[in-house]
Length: 316
View 1 (cartoon, one colour):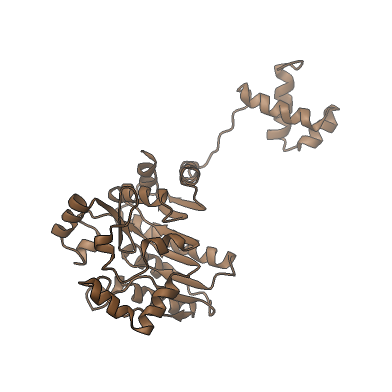
View 2 (spheres, one colour):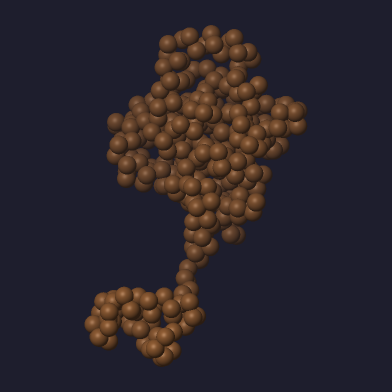
């Protein structure tokens, strides 16, 4: 610590940290340069004369957020503290925070005009918590098909309708199933001008809202009957499926599983990656590996998840 005693360093630290003086004010009072004060404060920390403690419970989730942002080159991360919460309370808290985040993001970015949304239980909860805020210039698109009365409340079209009602925006609908039995049928449906228009415009949204899922037994895909438990098992064992986004299945390297995805009536995996702002709201230990692969392969640039899931994502 060169020509200064430990007491000199303590004096500068007290003036700066306890008394709230600026480095320039300390320099003037002691008759030295501001750069010297800056160096003394750095040296004091390195010598452990000064140790900074952040006295807030949120420091833990904030550190997880920063680590996720840096490791996966993300625009933003929100990690929700769920200590002591039941599964139902966790879902509600995450969905409420995600809804508030979305509204704040839209408010701060007035150039946004087109929003796309996928489907599923987590996104349904998010939409339910969205406030009623007037955004009449917004156009809201389904990013995947969905028809029928079975689990209709999870369908992209239904979520689009609810969002449009809450925002006073314009809803666009995609009246096709999420998955079709043959590629020939898919091509035939895409010849319809209304269907093709919504699919094409879905690729050009400014913001896309997604979940990332895995094929665990309790997943929405299996619970809703889109795929059977046996099919899920085959997908994992024979095709190497680790997860899906917008019902676009991918393997551990983030590659699209064409044998399945060619039957999906929705925005493709490559098109998902091309959306400028991709907000993924996903959580659960069973999904951690799928979320990690999705982040590594640029399927999201904003992530909203739980503390437990964040730790699992970072564990490898």
